[in-house]
Every structure is written in structure tokens, then in C-alpha cells.
Amino acid sequence: MPHSDFDKSSPAGAKSTSPSREAAHSKILVLCIDRDDDIGSKGGIETPIVGRDACINAGTRLAIEDPEDADSNAIFGAVKTYEELVSKGYTAEVAVVAGKFNRGVEADEKISLEVKSILEKYHADGAVIVSDGEDDETVLPIIQSRVPVISVQRVIIRHSRSVEYSYAVLGRYLKMLVYDSQYSKFFLGVPGVLLAAGALAVIFDAGKWITAIILAILGGAFIVRAFDIDKTLSSFGRLTPTSFIKIFSVIAGVLIILASFANGLSSIPMDMLRPDMSALDILSNRTIVGSFATGTITLLWIGIATILGGILLSNWFRGSTRTMSDILRLAVLALLYIPVLQFTAVLTEGTSPFTLISSLLIGLAVSLVAATFLYQYFRNKKGGSEVLKH
Image (tube, rainbow, N blue to C red; front, side, top):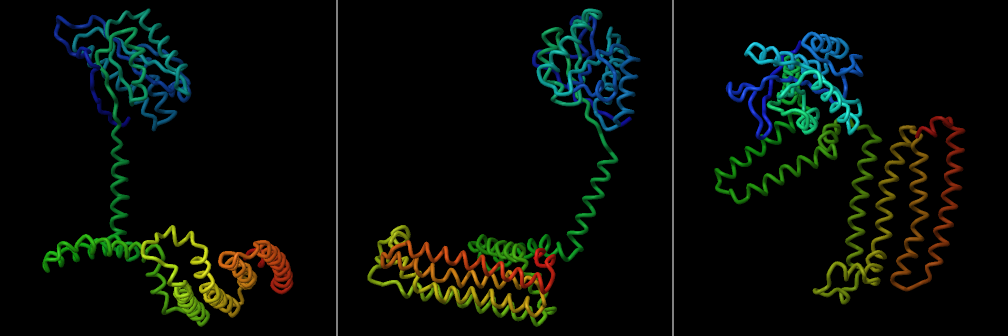
């Protein structure tokens, strides 16, 4: 059986299990508590169980049925405590009581009745409680109402093999963090850079910047890892011609989008901007928002279309069936252009929003028709299963 330790403690005001002869108890009941009734549900043994041999048989039965259950060790711990008391000259008895599987009030009531039945036959004037955890010890007030509790002992199991296994696994992970470049560059590289930066800051008397330097390094490392920038950079040597098309279109599209924001800012009438205006004042001004949107939309749409067009060409040259989705994205982008322009007109010129609603409905109808046409076209050309997959 696994080894066990006894975590001994006594309730407030309780007497010790090895008192002086004047305060010695005449009869001591060593009581093992199994509140969730593992002894019954797993071992098939009814409680209460009274007597050394009966308790050993019950613990053995439970250990055979479930070797990992700690209650069997608690039973053997109660037997050991009983034998220690007897060897010291005490009059003692050992017993096991159990509650019910679902714990709760019914389990506590069952334990109370079993303790009562034991005390009717063995008139103990003190009890030593043995358990394997705090859950079993919640019934202490119930037992104390029937017999004084003079000691509480908790059995703690030592799983030496599990500890060795845990150390082996830990050592394997530490070795992986040190020697595997996929992990070492972050778990060793980032702390190494932080330590080096701190040392340089101390050498050059720039201690006031050390916090900013550390935050910048950590922020950069998190961004690189979050967006797989390191993997993207390392894959540049394996780029295909279609990948260059995608990269060029993405960079060109981002530049056009940035230019659209700059153009939108220049479209705002400068006489409408005041130094005392807050961000809320600016966003709530329909003229400012509308002017910014009017100057931004065209270039913004061109930038997004450039990105989507590059992805479309890349997938087209690779023969991927994802081209259907790429074409639909471009079609939806084109159909949304006019409604967005009409929305800016509603903000700046106060035109009727019903024209915007009608444009949206027309765009939705055209999108459905285009999606249906493309689906039928690619299904006949590539096979319906591939289209559905992508």
C-alpha cells in the first residue's frame, strides 16, 4: 500500500490523544469517516464497520476495487492509530462510518445515525477522527454532538512514483525550452535581451529609460509571436510567384488605404475645426464626418480592391477554387460603393435615406444572383464537392 503521513491537529479546546493519567479517557473510539460512501459504492460493504479485522478487510476490499482511492489509506491509518493507542495502554475501538454518494444533508444524517449505533454498543467518552481530506471533516460538529472529539488526523498520501514522473516530464519540457529553437528564441531569447538591455542601461547610466526599453522589447516580442511575423520572414526564401503577387497587392493596398485617410483629413474644412473641440464633438458633427468620409471612400475602396484583387490573381494562377469567394468579395465591395456614397450625402447634404435603402436592396439582390451564377459555373467546371469545401 502507499505510504501515509498523519497531519495531526486538535479542535479548539480539545484534549490530546496522549493526556496525563488524571485526564485520560477510559474508552476511545477511533473513527474513520467516508462521507461520499466509497466503501459502499466501490467496495460493496455496508457501514458501520466496527473492529480491527473488519476494518482491515474493508480497506483491503476498497483498495482492490480502486487502488487510487485515498479512503482505503484512511482506513488503514485509523487501524494504525488504534494499534498505537492500544500499545500505550488505552482502551480503544476502531470503526468506519460512511455517508452517501451525493454527500449533502442525507449523507450527514446517515453518519450521525451510524455513530449513534456504534456508541450504543461501545460507550466511548472520546473520539479520534481520521479522514483523507477537509470534506470528510465537515461532519465534525455532528460527531461532537454525540461524543467529544479529542484529536483529528488527516492521512496524506505520498505518491513517490508520480513525483518522479512529474520531475521527468518537467525536465523534458525544460530541455525542450532550452534546445528547441522554436521555443528557446522566446523563452530564452526575450529574457536574454531584457537582461542585456538592463545591463547596458546601467552601464550607460540610462536607468530612467529601462522601464520603457523593457516594455518596448516585450511588446515587440508579443507582436512578432501573435502575428507569426518571424515565420513570415523566414518563409520569404520559399515564396512562389503567386505569393509575390499577393505580397505586392497587400503592400500597395495598405499604402492606398493610408493615403485615403490622409486625403479624408485634408477634405475637412479647416474653419470647422476649433482647438477646444473634443473627440465627441468632432464625431457628432455631421459635416466634419461627412467631409472626411467623402474624401476617404474612393481611395479606401481602391485600396481594399487592390488587396482582394491580388489575392484573387494569386488563387487564380494556382488553380484554387477559392477564386469564387474572391470574386464575390470584389463584387460585394463594388456594390457597396454607391450606398456608402449615398450615406455620406445623407450626412453632408441631408438627402433622403430612402435612396440608400433602395441601393442596399438592389445590391443584395445582385449579390445573390452573382453568388448563384458563380456557384453553378464552378460546380460544373471543378465539381460541386470542391466548391462546397471552399
